[in-house]
Image (cartoon, rainbow, N blue to C red):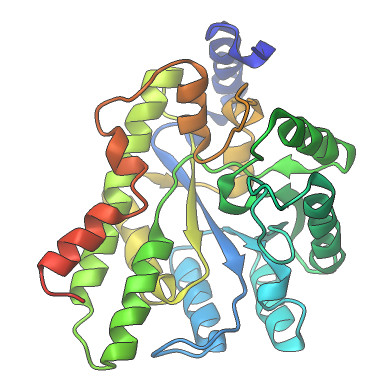
Length: 314
């Protein structure tokens, strides 16, 4: 196993040094907001691409949250209209990272390591011109390859090019609820979407508590969680409510840079095919196996969708 996973001694020692350095405020139940797959130019019900983008920025500004947008360049940033939306994030003080050109899956047998790396380099030529640019890369689908060769090749590539792995610890399936939201509104533009909002807020809260509890089991402490959401209609409508829910829960909101400075985000799980939430990957590396609540953090939102359909939201 990698040195980082030899017992928990090194991790605990680094955590102690972190707290001693006077920056422990980012530990106690804190969260950083990050978004993938933006900016998106596709049409959705209720809002134009520009309105969706601005609504998300307004929600962040209302709570004085500094976030990060991981740009999938071909989703919009290759066009002037989409580039302007991405630039608006940088102009507002948010960080911008790399999420490939076309969102391929490195775990797919048809996607080679060389192809995937070229996707990052091509996207970098665009993101590097934006305000707020950071050398942060987030794996698409949170999958770091389907073989040790791809895993090691990407780790060497990111180190060579000065990229940080933009890990996620608090994974959500907001994309699944966004699909349901769009489906419902396309069928009936006047549909009551309040149940979807409530399901979304409950989903985020359940995942937040589950990953907080998992960090305590693995690291013996509260880590600054890195939350994954997406640039979509769901968050254009209800991001402000999600942020308020964390505030009401007593969580502190930190910047992605503050969260990534925690030693836990330096770990590299020694698995043949690492991925998903960093915490879940660490748990599997340490042989934790299935634990109470495991099924609710790997179900891709199945629970919420089933509950909505039982309530007649179809």
